[in-house]
Amino acid sequence: MEKSYKNIMMILGAVAIIGVLAWGYQLYRGLIVTNMRNPFSWGLYVAMWAFFVGTAAGGLVVSSAIYLFNAKQLKPIAKVASLTAFIFSMGAMLILLPDIGRPDRLYNMILHPNFNSMLPWDFIVLSAYSLVSAVYSYVLMRTDIMEKGVKLPFIGLVLKKDVSGEQLAKIREQSEKYAKCLAPVALPLAILIHTVTAWVLATQLSRPWWYGGVLAPTFIAAALATGPAIVILASMVAFGYKERLKDTYALLAKVSAIASIIMLFIYYNDFMVRYWWRTGKEFEALKMVFTHYPLLHITEVVFILLAVYIFFKYPREKKGLIQGSLSVIVGVFAHRFLLIPPAYNLIPLRVPVITHRETVEWAYPIAVGQVKGSLINPEPVFSSFWKYTPSMAEIAITAGVLAIIGLVFMCLINLLPVREAE
Image (cartoon, rainbow, N blue to C red; front, side, top):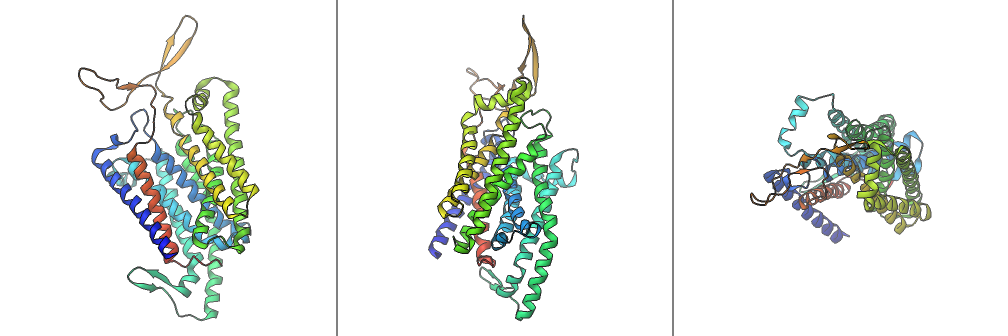
């Protein structure tokens, strides 16, 4: 077991180092090393940001449900769920740093926030959520920390208190009281971070793929689909697949499956409304999904439906839980990535063109921001459609952030007293 842990940590560490080096290369060369251009200013980083926010929200929903809805079956994995909420909320903020291009100027958003934009509000809500999830994690582990201590590298055991069983019982009772007080704050905040994240996109009037009121409910449903899936996988890493946790895993699987169905319903409800009118930019965005990105759309739907089938069919089997969790994660990530291309390839600059029968609109081409070709054989520098695929730098940096999340989680479950289920 110790050897496997070291091997996993070495692999994650290597991927994290590659990611840091790739980010250094991007900082040196600029965002030109990505495949984003002027017509396509958001890409893989922002898709991962939305994915991480949803995963973080789902983690704290699982923890707070214990006290708000009396879901006692979830109590054994409450500490792991709250830890995933904290780690993924920090990951959501971390993945935005390479997207900024000049992270050294980030202080300007703090000193001179523009509250007419949703981005400062998202930063505030996400920061508050990270703080609450960290406090919630400490409250859940407070008694165990005093009883067993925290193992720090090169230092050893710290924070262990020599207290009697009666005192520990009182401290545990206090912790339960604090957790019950935090739960009504944590759940609305978990919903709010995903709602505000959706508003960052939905309030962009010039992007008909996002504009509207269904994006926030879709985001919340996606969070409730991926959050439990991540908690299942994280709990299996921390505790293993134990008999006494079967009911817990089964409940999480059912929550994820039901949320996935709701997500697809909201998604296709929006599709139906767009298709019904068969006109306007909203319909053009829908048409682009099926004409330019059909494989990506098929991926999101097939994997989500596959996860629903597996979770309902095998909610208590280890193999089924792992396959279902990975399937819903892949499907929701594809859904997150598909947020970007139809929005940016419907260029909002339009020119009316009058023909002998009708007046149509042509997309006004935008300079891509990169000189290509040579003086003798120049290549076009204007584009009305950009075929975006993440560059190797973007993939390496994203993989590095994922590895850092994995490293932090593996370290915390070994340092903190979370391994033993209550």
